[in-house]
Length: 281
Image (cartoon, rainbow, N blue to C red; front, side, top):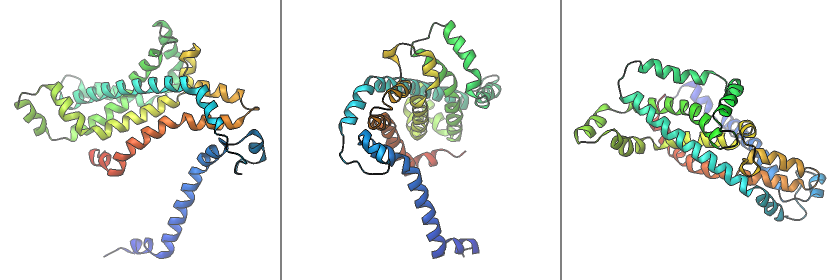
């Protein structure tokens, strides 16, 4: 029998309130997207007329100008974020496999040292990290971005993957070893297919964070051709601020295209429940 609370929740009046609340929340969250896309087709005059009004003429040229100005930096950001996220997830998953399936002295102590990194705000170590990058002569190279990402980003990967690997039955790994599989074969043909939803979750999280990062790339990348999108995007929007703000809005839309693709790919696993089935924290 349903409890009194469940009966109240399923009442028509309660459902109307819940549906109204969800609808308003969704519309409110999409408001900024609507304004950005709408104004990306406007002329400067239409924007001054009102940001919520429809454009008198659809200016597709705003997107042509935005893509022309950002294409090189967009590719730089995608390349840097993809390589950094891929290597970080790979190294983190290998370390998690070692922590979960291997026995060695001080394993738990070393693992807690890994987790301790999560307790420290990243901004507190910027000065030390910048000095470290200078000493290694990595300034104005993409390794100045990849090395800190690999050092700190793999912590969350190790935590999630270790939890996942520890939940898997030992008989699977033992049977593979009996059949002659070594650790490399087990990792490639057993571990990675099972952990694919978590792989994508970590990859998308790291890719998004790295793609949207502004402060650190602005500090370590000096050459204009090597600059990443978020650093250049601010400069471009300042230049176009009083000339053609429609191009600025188009730049915001163009800059979000890679994140749309990664989100669509990853949401497939969240929608199917694969990630929830694989993780029980």
